Image (cartoon, rainbow, N blue to C red):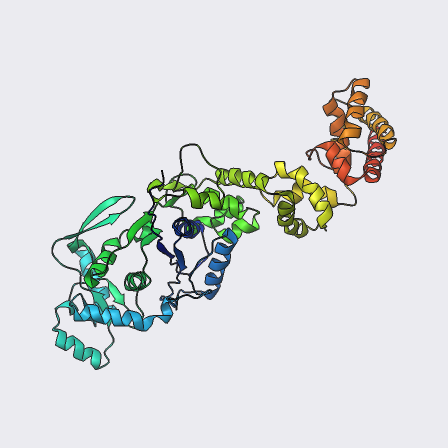
Length: 499
């Protein structure tokens, strides 16, 4: 039973575009999208770009393109606008400064004038003493009037949140329950840098409040600073959203957290954690979504095939699993194959065409639509298409001579079998499964061969491959004239081998 709230939710996906868009981002965006659409709510894309040194406009465009490829759209965002614009944090500087100043005035934050050199010395001393490294509170103890005057005088400063020294804070995560942390273990984090730009800790909390975010679904990397975020919200007296911190992804081995550093080795094996790579490797967005959704969520213990519409209908926060999920690329292949076989032929042909063209084939629409149903049951990715069906678009095929020889047969026996097949097929008005299969089976019996032996010779002759789609359906697409020409060429090759 679905236990998600009936009330429309407002959720957000708030990435920092500093690099390539990976599976973790895709999954976070997906779960937010599902909850919004299931409840008739709104899904907001917000760009967390206050770290301008690391922000990359190309990364932001890749993020948008990747999510669009997955079929994930948003109701508000930097490219579509909305009532809470702007949706780039870097353009909301004054909003954050105003709220940071309010925290200072309320006694929940303070100005800090410590230099980087002084902070480094403090850390060194703490490390030598083997105590936790954290801010030592020097500027926290300054009289507010002195701090205000130094700010007025233009002295460089940051703003730190004044975490209580005493007591503890209890926060609640929907997947993990209540989490209690002693305040003495929480640092006085910087919330506004010396350049006046807010850090995520303040900016995200302010934006979530101003944008009426009801549920925060985000990665588990935010769990360590989760108590700080709750402190900030409670200092303002705001209502907290429902917090959901997702599971981490483990390496395929199940040992250790998956990281971007592992991606180069994955690419050598034909896999990737990056969405644009998965697209270029021939994976369908439907397959990637299905696979990704089930790394952290399940509907029941047996249903595995989901379209995006299915997921919108069936998704539930209460079925999310906080346990780490190992990335299993074999399952990606499995789901991608299922979704390839679920596509209508014209749709699949349209998606295959760029891959045929990239492989050097002029795969015209009409013929590709004929070829597609023959390879559809046999391919795992779109990239497999040209390998499985490229010969349909080749003027000539050049089978290896030894592959023309039937199993447990000599070249001469194979040549004779191919010649007799040629003579029978040449008398047919057209070659297809209905007209050719029975005569070829009869010929195999007459020659004392198994059908597979004769069919293997003909397959290599006609396709240049030992593995192909069904032989006679393949012949029908290639056409009688070309089929006969290729069998004739095979007979000549086999005769030369015997000589």
